[in-house]
Image (tube, rainbow, N blue to C red; front, side, top):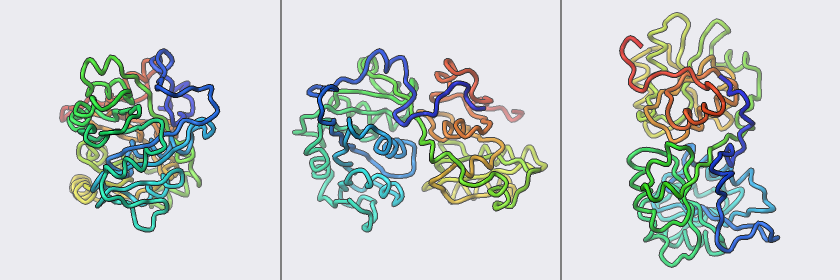
Amino acid sequence: RTPSGVPSCRPAGLRSQAEDAMPLIFPGTDSRRRRPVRVAFLTPTLLLGGAERWMVSLARRCDHHRIVWTGTALSDWAPAKPEICRELSAYMPIFAGPGAGPPDDCPSVVRCRSTFDAVRLATQSADILVTWGLPDLGRLLAGIELPVVFVSHGAGDWTARAVQSSEPACSHFVAVSETALLPFRPQTRSRAIVLHNGVDVERCAPTQPREITRHSLGFDDQDILIGYVGRFSFEKNPLAAAIAARKLGGRFHAIYCGEGWKEAEVRSAAENIAGDRVRFIAHQRIVGNILSALDVFMLASPAEGFSLSLTEAWYAGVPTVATRVGAVPELERSNGELVSAVPVNPSPRI
């Protein structure tokens, strides 16, 4: 269901009460000065996930009179996708540690001997460093005297390990939802603020009529398409769409659009469940066409930090069935019912 009253989700996030009450204040910065604040990123991946899309949206949509980007440091052996690298490098250089994944033909990529060197090049003219997902930041940031903002994008064990081992090296703490606050230690959690994610509205706008997209996929108006759009990882329970299509029968079909290192395994498992009721579609940077073609968007994750894909489905006006995890409960407090909820651990009957 489209959330009533939710604005068009600016990339910096929907304003929260915490944001209004306690804005981020950095030593040495002054909103009245004429020089923009210079910001660097430090990231463990440049894949097609929500955190990376958040980085690109911030770079693209910020007020360039107030913020400029000095570079992104990519850690050693970090995986990266050409699409995200090229999008991000349009706004800043990417300093990649050895073995990191940016393609050689990607513009503005600087190969470095180590993450340590990459961080120093990205931050050499920066006022602030924004980072996420990396453990033990102290060893990487030794000698760097900048405010460091650590952003929690998740709520799982990996996020907790990264957050808690890196807290001593950071000065400011942000979470994309109340759930994403939980990995912080209690004393840090009390100082952190919640800034909700938003969507890039151009990414969610269809470029052709719904009927044309559905016809190109081999479906007509009588078919009912249940969609999973996102990362192919079993932790997100993508097989729920295939199970629903099999149980409902008739003209119900499960549509999968995304990417991920578990794609082959997810595809095989989904096809074993629902056979020819399952259709896999290549990842699309502009998700508006596939979202407009769906009858239902389904997200049955047992846990989420925020879920950008669910927010994109809301913005596109797709009816949504989801577990009430991540930011959903807190957004429903202010916007009313946003999903037709299913339990995290449904019984066989459900």
